[in-house]
Length: 347
Length: 125
Image 1 (cartoon, helix red, strand yellow):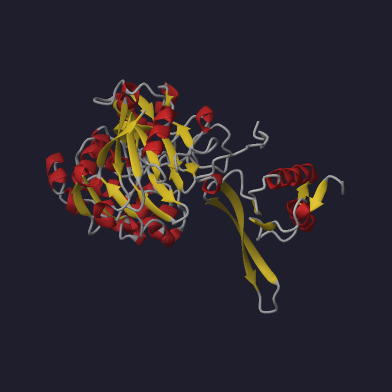
Image 2: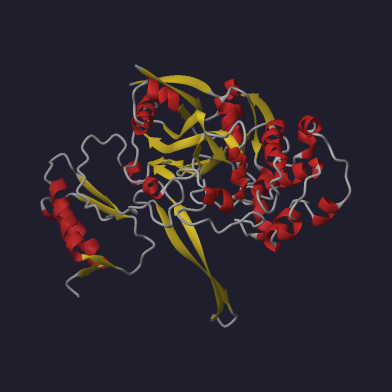
């Protein structure tokens, strides 16, 4: 029996990728008759003395939520770090359990209304770990796994080698493209992405924030809260992202059901740019002063957002997404198959 | 309480003495607490470590004992003390901030080791 897995190996994308990043699909784990943890050990054994971050993906029956608060198809349902075949017993593996639907969730987390629409309706929601998933982790522990040299943070979107002190990001739609053999753009995250990933929404058991209680950072706020320094926090790290038309397509779905940036969904540069082009309202008065400082540091001002502009159709926005959505200047487009290998581990 | 916790310098000397007890030629090193200048360590644990050092030196192939202290939780939480110092050297104001630090885990010391004897107690429950 063999276990199929995908790996974006160290050195991929013209040497930009600094460490091995493995994706294992839930259906392939089930086909091999393994538990998710056993699958991670199998991959670790297959990698020998090498190390990797591992994301376990459900691309068929699940949905997740991006840091912008956009419900997305597929989900990371478990994460791990492996080094020399070893997985730290306390911190090396993190399951991400499904979150049950409740009316209270929709009331408290308005961005989740998108979950109730097609094609997401009825799919299982995986976002962040439950209290039980986190096990013995303390309040200081992020949603991170650590084994040996490798850390895998924010439920599988930010991976590091703690010895070489390298790092790479993959916002969720980048992973989605890898799993679906689409195209990705890879380059330096830059100031707009750095600012944008701090513009999160408030959730219980979110990918990054929120546990039993709702996270402290509501839509319109900045989790970075670091003024003009926010644009530098990830500015020199590489990122694997979806092409901008893909990001536009999924973000427009939230705008189509009248979720409002800065109130219901995050106010990242990408979301604000799309809402402006689409002629959708933005909760400008709800964007916190500290968030404005960060947005203004990358050239996004209230004045520009309030200025009259041509309203584009959905198709026009997707066609012009590269012009509309700021960030990732100079990123190069790759086919997923050019950066990602399919391998099989003995089980 | 003096008997309950061991002074940091005493821990270092006790550990070295244990390493050299069977054979004074046994080499010894200890690392991991370089940034901690003064501390008290649980005496019960100090005694266990001394006993375990003796166990390691029972193996005639062991010529050196290396002790490494590494945080059990590799994601440690620090307080950052940002001090504003005046010309006369006194501190006028301080801003305190949190800082999470993620460091390589204990596995980095285990690569390729055939025999791992884990005597840690479960202190997390």
